[in-house]
Length: 209
Ligand SMILES: CC(C)(COP(=O)(O)OP(=O)(O)OC[C@H]1O[C@@H](n2cnc3c(N)ncnc32)[C@H](O)[C@@H]1OP(=O)(O)O)[C@@H](O)C(=O)NCCC(=O)NCCS
Image 1 (cartoon, helix red, strand yellow):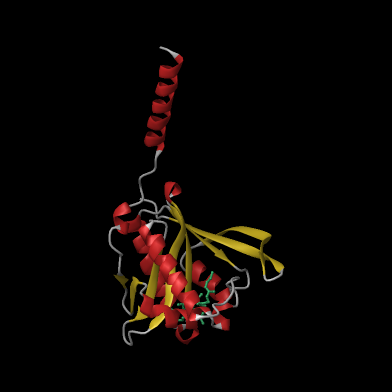
Image 2 (tube, rainbow, N blue to C red):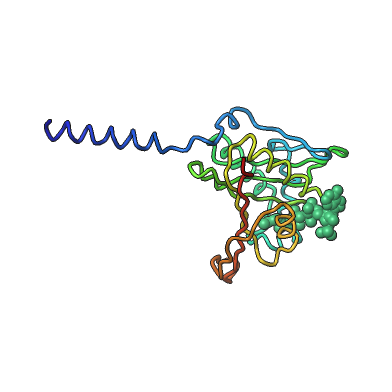
């Protein structure tokens, strides 16, 4: 075997090894058509441009943004842009973002997403928010329960992470009620608005068996 053939064979062996160790647990079929979901009181749908105004009102609300450690939306265009980014994430199979509607009123009340998808590790980070008019009704609890079933039974995730500001009591309560476990406390790992902020990392593993 000459040098050229040996190099070629080596490349093939490397490729075969990566195929053998590839984790194919994630169900790519989830990205074929948007997975609309529902629970007792809510429906979860793909974002549309017509949700821009409601999304702007949500992400510019000071109570919503208090512990989000990102800048509030300034204009409705910021909301339109994020809706476009949601659409691209779905198309590129890198994230899933649902607009949440109250069944009774058909009002947009918030969102839930799986983003930062680590495909090979079957892990994703979640993000969520509700308009304050809808806090204290168990709506995000109902949402997260629906999304956890989807994540483990249909999407093929093995673990789910949440990165929370330690002062975000509502979010921490929601995660702990849903069996998320605190796995890390990073000190001053995030620079926002002129200061270094701590981060709490919660995680949930797929149920055994
Ligand atoms: C995080 C957030 C979604 C939590 O909203 P929430 O309404 O407090 O959470 P839930 O939907 O789980 O509702 C729980 C409350 O509803 C009450 N409740 C009423 N009816 C209920 C029902 N049928 N089922 C469950 N809980 C119910 C619970 O008692 C609880 O109230 P309590 O905290 O006073 O005990 C909300 O605070 C938010 O949008 N924050 C801003 C954005 C944000 O910080 N996102 C997270 C970034 S990490």
